[in-house]
Amino acid sequence: QVQLVESGGGLVQAGGSLRLSCVASGDIFSITMMAWYRQAPGKQRELVASITRGGTTNYAESVKGRFIISRDNGGNTVSLQMNSLKPDDTAVYYCNSIIRDLARGLFNYWGQGTQITVSS
Image (cartoon, rainbow, N blue to C red; front, side):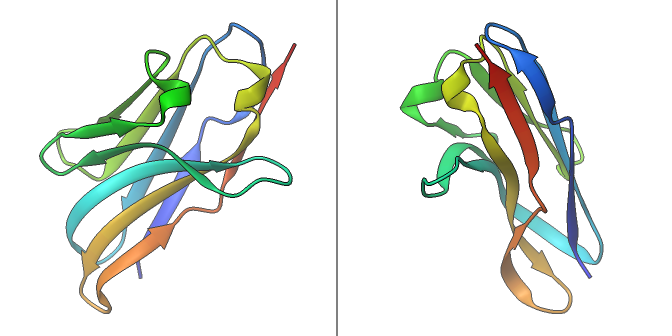
């Protein structure tokens, strides 16, 4: 059974920084892509940033230049360094990964979500 476990959420003042981490564990054969999404109250879930197995990154326009996504050398951990945070960044942040595991084959997994609140 594959799990994505997030950590690092919390409350921060505008202009501050936070770092999110997500670890994938279980019967993993390979990880194709890891990403962070977020969902603010009353809004649809949106992609924040993604990183492929090869290290190619993609960012939402709203976070370019402020957020940095990275993966560890083993590839099972993805982090999101969030700088210059704004109140508009307030949302529940979800880790997402496309994983080939031994039970389901290629499957899209989600973490449980972690709340980020940026106060003005």
